[in-house]
Image 1 (cartoon, rainbow, N blue to C red):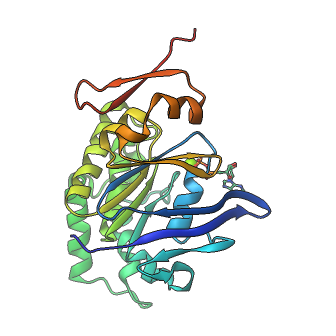
Image 2 (image 1 turned 180 degrees about the vertical axis):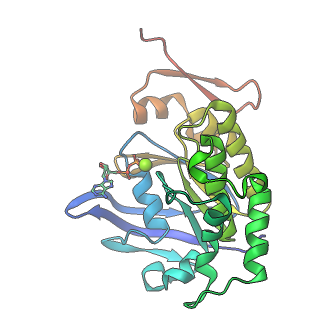
Length: 262
Ligand SMILES: Nc1ncnc2c1ncn2[C@@H]1O[C@H](COP(=O)(O)OP(=O)(O)O)[C@@H](O)[C@H]1O
Ligand SMILES: [Mg+2]
């Protein structure tokens, strides 16, 4: 799948009631890339993802999807282009894996829902891609954290959108399952999907991202290749963390080592 998609935030101000989170922010999602958004807690990463997916309306400026203001598009038109995995997705009690993944198809169905062979095929493909086919009849609430996260990703994949946005998809997973999820996202990206993920681990960001977006206080303070963005100065400035950056012995990308401040 290499369907092209162009998504950008054009001079947007994002706020909750009177509280401004981002002011006059501009950002274009690089097409076909694996983009990772980094930044300290509460800097506005989730808010930006919500805006990009059309869930949060900017109070000024616009989110532009394929040349059109997302606010003027039907939710279904947006949901067939952009899949979002929110930060704390919760599954309905007792729902099975197959049922949850099938929900990714709802956006493709008309008012009177008719389950089609296309829907069936999309669900089967998404479960195969994420390695959850064998779990199909299991209850989501009985799965391990890593399995559950793969099921959520399968749900987003079943939506078959050219772009997926994932908010902290590796949180609560042990390191092996983090790597498994990131490798999965990498494969999906290389197979043609544009991927944007919020990650907390800077070293994983450096390893997996083609494009890094660093945020601070609602603003994008650095953007570009990991080697150009994840620098000691930036980490010190944005995270207030004394650190050293050395080349990752596996990849040569930046590896951030906190200074020993005990
Ligand atoms: N629904 C909401 N209503 C009011 N304030 C919110 C809401 N969601 C987030 N915020 C506030 O907006 C700021 C940015 O939050 P968020 O985008 O979730 O940050 P991040 O994802 O970077 O941790 C925070 O101060 C947070 O408390
Ligand atoms: Mg967040």
